[in-house]
Length: 227
Image (cartoon, rainbow, N blue to C red):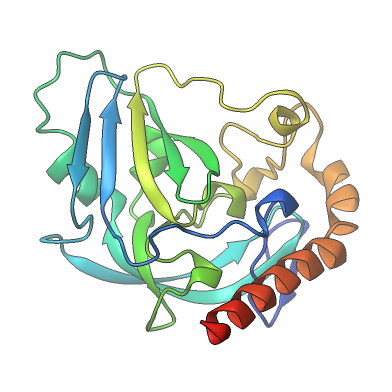
């Protein structure tokens, strides 16, 4: 069954905010992650997936603009396993953590509550459909949170900032478009306006956004061939 307000498509395009179309990871083979807890220190994990049990998980990917790619098979490790190994043991005097800001190599940032990140189906993934992640879909490492719209499924992950009180990371129009949880089942597409209304606005953005990202990817691939 398709999620509320979504329309299935057979392909899985590179997609996002248009201003990120020409931005790519600076270190596409680097699976290290920097951790920060309440701004009190930074700790680098050289390989975020090392020494953790791997799993595969099949789930639909829901873009907030109303398209869904069904049956994506992600491979990686559970976020909660990563958290238990690398965050819980940190010797930092801190109040209870409530959420995290996730930061990408291309400059994009998003946030999620810790209770959402700790669900069984939330992964740090490095494969898609049994193949290594490409830059198109988030290499070298990305977050996969199937219950949340795609803008919470951050690509090119490089840093996670854990907080007891989540900071506001977006202002103005960006804040309007960024729901704190962005749960697909509740159509939390944005703030202050019902999700079923936003469907019609977002749907108009798909062709133009897809074109911008396709052209940027083709340009990068052409530059790679020239090198």
